[in-house]
Amino acid sequence: MAEHQENPDLPDLARGVAEAELADGGMLVGQFEGQSVLLVRRGEEIFAISAECTHYSGPLASGLVVGGTIRCPWHHARFDLRTGEAVAAPALAPVSCWAVERRLGRIMVGKKKPAPGRALPGGSAPSRIIIVGGGAAGFAAAQRLRDLGYSGSLVMLSDDADAPVDRPNLSKDFLAGAAPQDWMPLRDSAFYEKQCIDLRLATSVAAIDVGASEVRLADGARLAYDRLLLATGAEPVRLSLPGVDLPHVHTLRTFADCRAIIAQAETAGRAVVMGASFIGLEVAAALRQRGLDVHVVAPGKRPMERILGPQMGDFIRALHEQRGVVFHLEETARAITATGVQLAGGGALAADLVVMGVGVRPRAQLAEAAGLRTDRGVMVDAYLETSAPGVFAAGDIARWPDPHSGAAIRVEHWVVAGRQGQTAAANMLGERRKYVGAPFFWSQHYDLGLNYVGHAEAWDTIEVDGDIAAGDCTLRYKREERTLAVLTMGRDLESLAAEAGMEAGIAAV
Ligand SMILES: Cc1cc2nc3c(=O)[nH]c(=O)nc-3n(C[C@H](O)[C@H](O)[C@H](O)COP(=O)(O)OP(=O)(O)OC[C@H]3O[C@@H](n4cnc5c(N)ncnc54)[C@H](O)[C@@H]3O)c2cc1C
Ligand code: FES
Image (cartoon, rainbow, N blue to C red; front, side, top):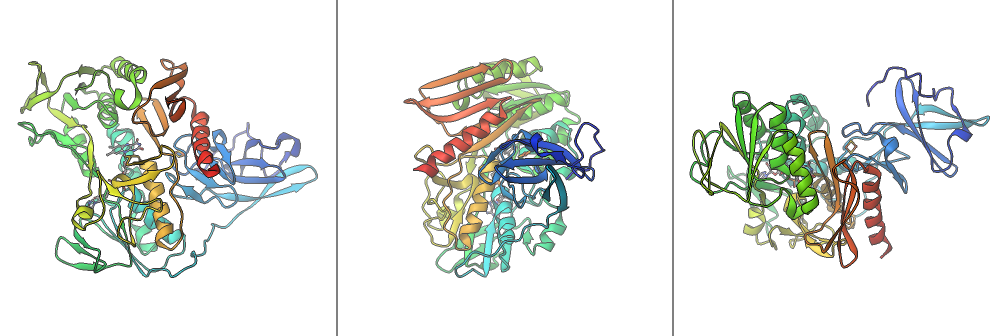
């Protein structure tokens, strides 16, 4: 938690505030020993927790209290009000909590509470767990296993040479040059040592033998498991075009990909981004922030129209055009040369950097070869277990029965991957916890963020409330009167309420 200068505008919680200042259901930010502390009152109970989210320092006072949790307005992390525990991704570290005293009509903050400990769930705990994948789902699962008290062997295999990183930032602040390199790892190497997580980088898994409960590494070594989590994520599609292997043509998935784009951007003046969806446009924004000329080539009529609809498509286009991005829509590339991109429509664009953001495909080959049930991803049940008992899957590869849309869906969202990793961890230890989280993602373009809750592949109506052009709106994607998804800009509380509402709807069934 960040240290703060004394702020004369905030009440000193060592001296306390009058009880009347904190009504039932209310929140109040004060300071205690130089730190911002949030008081939350629920009936007769008062909680004191750090006012800043441990993900990107979001202001918890602008969040939503649901049951015993407080939810961050920026990317929906959840913290237990009593213990401070980060119960749901994307936050991976707890917030501090303090004891609260009520004396002579005043509320005062006392001693900091110790970090929470958890008892291992009942049942026969496995003694060897292997996680294949060092991304959002794999990391969150490993951390949650240790948080839950699992003390057996925990091996995490990743074919990436870098330890797990904050992948969403690869197309945002880090690519734009606004975040230092040391922001990127989710944890430093000391964390893995301390938690006894045997993290093996640049280690490729070649096969899984579910009959023998073994994974085979590319170097031929075999490792036995009692429980296995597949969290192999997705890989970027590389269009098959002449010139696609030229050195200035990139895709973006890993930290190394991002460093290579940055190295090229340092000398490049003109970039062509292929694809006008989330990653393509975030890359376009970041490269504009670095001062490059940026052209975007995409086959659709509007950017992001298939996912967000025409109104948002027009808005996103205008937003990027105001910042100097030039779109070539309803257009595709025919070939890439050392100096540019030739368009199918006959034109040509000069470029010394080309980035393809044309989608990803799930890395489900291991599961397919092992005979697990797959269908455009790895099929899992509500507990995230695959068709092979004891083998779980989470994140971008998993297709799960989503209770909100009623369909088996697979998404590519950071928060979903992290939360599925956390649920799979509990279930690998013998809990029977269904994954019922409403899908959620965020995207950032320059200083504008959008939040999206739910899942709508097709809709018949988009209900717009507010002013899209002003970045202050809520869009509801509906089919037959039912809201499938809610997009907000500048209305974080509505996004949180939509998520909580969808989840409450499921809980009530
Ligand atoms: C640039 C970028 C920006 C993004 N921005 C956002 C955003 O703003 N919001 C959002 O919600 N989502 C965003 N996403 C999507 C989000 O990052 C993914 O949904 C998330 O990372 C999925 O997590 P995962 O654990 O399933 O897979 P990954 O994070 O991809 O991790 C997969 C891991 O498996 C390893 N692996 C794969 N196969 C093998 C093998 N055979 N042997 C060993 N290891 C293997 C890989 O090396 C990797 O470590 C972004 C993605 C990218 C690339
Ligand atoms: S800042 Fe709180 S969830 Fe991201």
